[in-house]
Image (cartoon, rainbow, N blue to C red; front, side):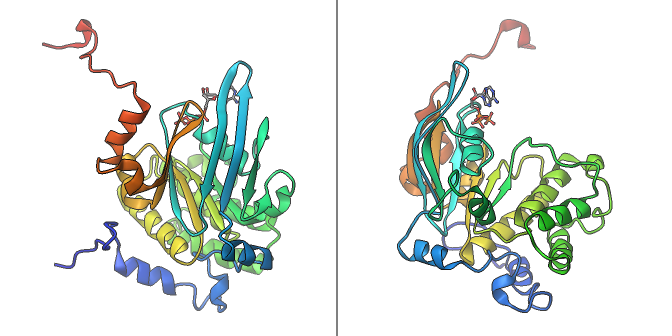
Amino acid sequence: MHDPRHPDGRVRHPDRLHRLSGMFDDVIPDPAQRLVEPSRPSGRELRAQADSTPALRIRGLWKRFGDKVAVAGIDLDVPAGSFYGLVGPNGAGKTTTLSMATGLLRPDAGSLSILGTDVWADPTEAKRLVGVLSDGIALFDRLSGEQLVTYHGLLNGMDRATVAGRTRDLLELLDMTDAGGKLVVDYSAGMTKKIALATALIHAPRLLVLDEPFESVDPVSAANIRDILHGYVESGGTVIVSSHAMDLVQRMCERVAIIAGGRVLAAGTVDEVRSGSPLEDRFVELVGGRHHSRGPAWLRTS
Ligand SMILES: Nc1ncnc2c1ncn2[C@@H]1O[C@H](COP(=O)(O)OP(=O)(O)OP(=O)(O)O)[C@@H](O)[C@H]1O
């Protein structure tokens, strides 16, 4: 039987990838404009890639909420063209870091740049370069899925015809065509994730930042989303995902950073960071906090 595993160990779905790579040929004749591929790089982006400017560069990042230090001096480089995982225990500072990196939350100190563009000095240009799927951010849920994706396309300054074509393509790609006319408030959690992903993709950004993209998503949809993301990276885009699913990050990502207490504990290729152990074991070893107790007596049934 055909083994869908790539030599790098990742599972591939050749039929779907083939369909993805060809599906925009008719709709958008210019290959550089195809949806699963990031938009055509500008002169500055091409120079950035040529001199290996990271897709995301973080230096000396700090954020405090009252007495709570959420991010305590993070330095991180995410190479352009990589599939990067960000992992950490609850409250580690992942969402806070990604919110600052994507222009949603102002840092107390530090610098952030996306493909050489300073996120806080030139937020308009930075936002053109990045697509964001935030964890827990409210959507305009009284719009239908199709209206929501269209709205994001128009907000990004795209013309109506392009937005309509891309919205149709994205709904199909994410198996949401039938649900496109339904209000977002009536979507399941997984459908809401998928429509939020469509809003992040509509302007074909160069960098995708996805906070918990697979949470609540069924296994088939998750596999489809992984295919889309791999296709996007293979055509030059960069993906950063934050996830608690260690197994998924180990299989899906080339690079990973482990964050805890607002600091980076380890960062590098997945193989470097896990150093021969499963990523999950390495994570527990670095982060600590594992309890070996069997819990209180009243919780035991025998
Ligand atoms: N708006 C806020 N006001 C006060 N404290 C906050 C705020 N946002 C985050 N925090 C605190 O900052 C710390 C880091 O939170 P953050 O959401 O970045 O963690 P995380 O790694 O994304 O966690 P999880 O995996 O549970 O989503 C936590 O202690 C959290 O309680």
